[in-house]
Length: 64
Image (cartoon, rainbow, N blue to C red; front, side, top):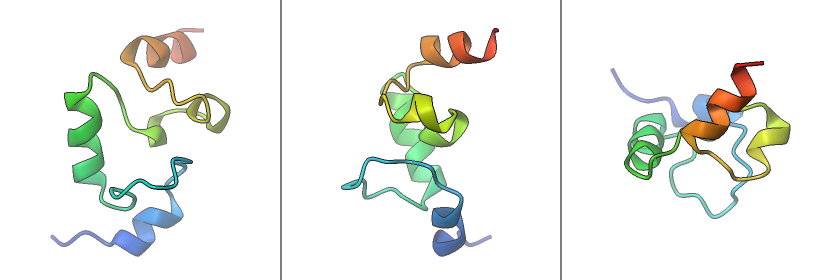
């Protein structure tokens, strides 16, 4: 199955503009997981803009 990068970009809420992985979900997930983070798309927009993509922040957001 091929990746539809343009469609993925439409649904990507990442605000980090120089990101080379936008629309390339597999690459994005792998990159962030290796950094101990999760990608922007799992966070609400207001949290995503803080660039705190840590797993701890994810748990804080969704354990309310």
